[in-house]
Image (cartoon, rainbow over the protein chains, first blue to last red):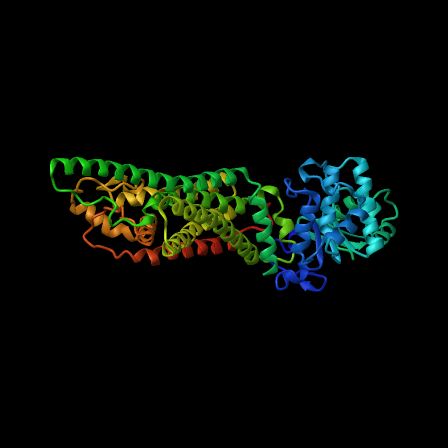
Length: 200
Length: 308
């Protein structure tokens, strides 16, 4: 699904739009407005953090990106811009992954299993970054995850995918109200998934 | 176009850090330098033998044969370079194309690139521009080495200099085809080993197998720049094979054209029932390069931007 919304894959059927742009007919229009962080953050290991960010910023049309890169690294509290990416830990790479995804100031940020493989400290740091990105810059964040505890702490609106179909979507607050007897989001999820509920 | 240039710049920076590329580049430039010296050395030795023979013949009152290099071009010193381009140059070109094709997938950044404002076609154009720049720069260095060393050893004229430039210009066209081939397979094949193996097999076929078929009566012609000392035998079967296969022998076409450009005696001793004109290579070699570029266009259509 994320591959389709980020225009990396064309849908075999159906239609999808991101920020008003059709993912097939106007894929460049979509790409101009999104940032993307894949599950496993891979960058050019032989290049430094700054060199990697410069490349992706220039690909997004920023001709002189040094100032913007400095701003982003400052926002993410990254002080290792001159280090080679191959020398970074998973958590550090994840930050650089986010940096490359927001360096061109996208309207929507797609995060694919962003907490995968991170230790609890890494997960908390990432959660704070995600929330700050939304609060400070107004970026809409589309995140897919299997960790429902993260959903509860991060998301304002949720959707449940089952066998490739979107079977539920609503705000988190409404969802919690709709299932008052359930103790956790996990139980709510199981109930939705089990009943194939199509409620809006 | 701006995105293509960004990709090209990135590729150029990256290839200069690749050890395999740098090693082959040093070998190629080293052989360029060596080719002039080897050419000069062999000519010098033959001339010395001729001079000694002339002295002996004068003493004996016998007729003196014409000097061995009376009609030879100054550029005949560079005849080995034709073979080096066909061998090491083409190999280097395949490596350049291959490295540029697999680099993003190996680094796992393909999805990041294509979540940006760039199309697959712009991406391919960037790679092609980088290939042409790297090959062009490499051949400019080889041109300077050849021109300077030829000037020092043989006193070449301005027209000779133009001929050397023409030779390397035509070499760029020939080598670009191999680089595009390396790039095309690197973009479409999942395993990088297979992606490298296929263009190498094509290179082997073009460099060794087809010339053997077109000059089977003189099998060392494809590698040895020395002319045969005996007449080659005629055979209807081999002549027929030559006639059929010769236009497809890209390396033979390259050799014939560049030997004409450098004005050195041609090494091709293939005897067919039909003599193809030398200018055929001026058409066949660019056609080969365009064909390889089309392969790249087909490859980029199949290229999966969601993988890697």
